[in-house]
Length: 189
Image (tube, rainbow, N blue to C red; front, side, top):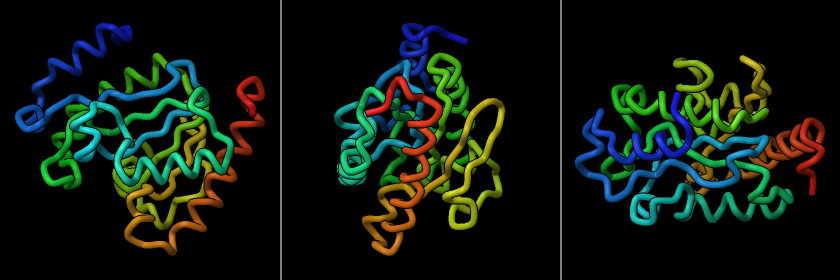
């Protein structure tokens, strides 16, 4: 396990998979490194690759609106992805790419020590919950594992394609906010 400085260096120098050849920036994560909640998505998109920051594109703007409505502030979470480099054309990361990056994500979990992990979408659920997980079947349900409370939910990009997912995701985040307030009262707004 690395400390933050060495972890950032290792991610920036990583060439474990082919994504290193096409990236503009490594997108390690953003937010409060002492937060009680960690949000995990799939991988950087075009805007994230350009800016080097997770969730800054259209899906990120939707997530910001949701956080604002839920009164979840930036100091309450850290946000990252399964892979740290953008897959070409925003495709789903391959298993090889995901497994190359997972040690970095695990390192982040050890350093941050969140109480809650929110899996944003099928890819995050697959690599954090179960390789056979189906987001439509497990979303909205708390899973307790290794001292973490894990909540799989839809990726905000899915809401941009299918508005019928908005209400279920809203309900998921109501449960997430309630748990966050209950187990982390010092970060309550």
